Image 1 (cartoon, one colour):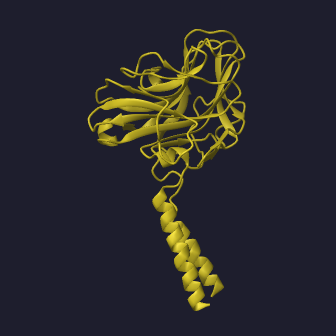
Image 2 (cartoon, rainbow, N blue to C red):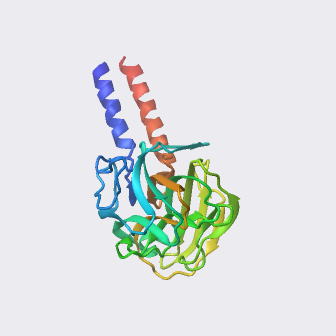
Image 3 (cartoon, rainbow, N blue to C red):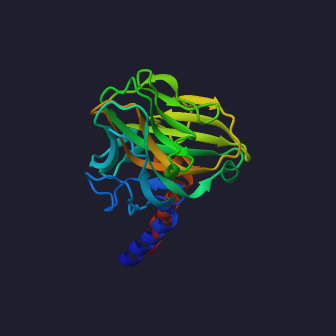
Length: 293
C-alpha cells in the first residue's frame, strides 16, 4: 500500500504543478551546452533546458571595441516571496576601449507579440537578472528590450535600462523608441537586480509602460516608473540586450530572462491556485492513508 500511495502522490504532483515554461512566451538562461563559456553567442542556436520562444540563432550587431561572450557566474535575487537563481552562465557585453554607438545581442522571437494577442487589460512582462561592473554612470545602456528585428541591426522598440544620469534605472516612454528617461533611483555596480518591465494593452494598442526593480511580492504592486505611451499595433519580433558608450573594461551581464503575460511566470512565483490544488490534494491523500492504513 505504501508503494501505491507514493505513486499516487507523484501523479498528483505532476498534475497540479505546471512545467517552468508552461505560460512563458520567451525563456533563456544560457544553460545549454551550445552556449560555450568564453565564446560569443553569434550563430548559436539555444539548447538550454526550458528555452522557448526563439526563432533561429542568436546574433549581434558588430561594433569596434565591443564584444559578447558567455561567462561563468550565477546571478540570483531573493526578496520577500521571490527567489530566483540563475543557471551558472550569463551573457556578457564588454568594451575593450571607449566606444560611441550601440552594440546589440539578440534573437528573433518564434511568434511576434502584439497588443491584440496580449488582450485588453493585460500586461506583457519581461524580466531579467542583470549585473554590471565599472562606472557606467555616463553611459546609456539598455538591459532589456523588445524590438524590431535585430537581424537588421535595429534597436528600436520598448526598452528598459540604465540611464546616463548616475546609472539610474530608466524606461523609454512616449513612443517606445526614444532615449531612456531616468527614474531618480540610482543603481550600483557589482549588484544583481531583478528588473521587470511591462507593456499594458487595451486590446488594440500598447497604452502604458511600467517597471519594477527587485520586487518582493507575488503581485506587481506599485511600479518604480510608469508612463503613458503612444504606440500603434506594433509587432514585437525580437529580444535584445544592448550597451551604448561603454568605457574600456566595463561590462554588463544578463542571466535568466523571461517574457509572459503572467507576473508569476516572470518572477518564478507559483500561481496561488496551484498551491491551493496541491494543498487540497495532499490533504486528500493523508485522509486516504489514514482511512486505509
